[in-house]
Image (cartoon, rainbow, N blue to C red):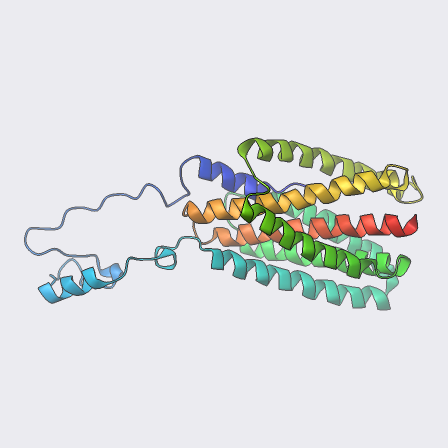
Length: 292
């Protein structure tokens, strides 16, 4: 959750001067002598037919083709795919919450499956050369399993912490969008590189801390159980928050750069992953604050 190879790949493709299928359209062959003709797949008369003056006038009167007609990415595409994945995460979270409530023995297996499964799959999706929609949906299911197992556990130990974390996540999402859109928070190539290195280091730290917590270090909290727990949690919240700004900027660049519509799945997947990361960081922070 701490790194997002999806946006790294999109940024690299944008920097290379366009996306697959766009930015270097091949020129068409000149029409035969006489009246101009158009290919049949455009919806106009085929190569064996000719255009009348009336048909030409109708063609010229039509509005230019928009992103939807050219198969390019639009903001609406990203919003719709993000909402679809968000619904999957929420639905699975709710179902898992009720399941572990009736069968507490399933909490830890589902917790581990969701956490490590979604982490591993995020790298598979991010570094894959093709947009694999089924894998993206499976990733959303795994995230739902993770959230549905961890949330009731924390809420039972620290009543009200889940609600507080949800509200804080939504408020931070809105605040980061406004700050990025207004230019108060800027995303540059340098800041992306620094953020990427810090996020990778933080991911390694989280994995080590998971191992330490299972060994009983810090009363099951790992490093977070020590005096620096709150500071580390605040750092995690800051990292996840800036990740949203990077996501917003990457989506904007992809739309303006004419990325293929299929990238809306990748962009939606990355955005939801960042939201889940932010929620987990808030959940941990507020739990530590209640414990202390």
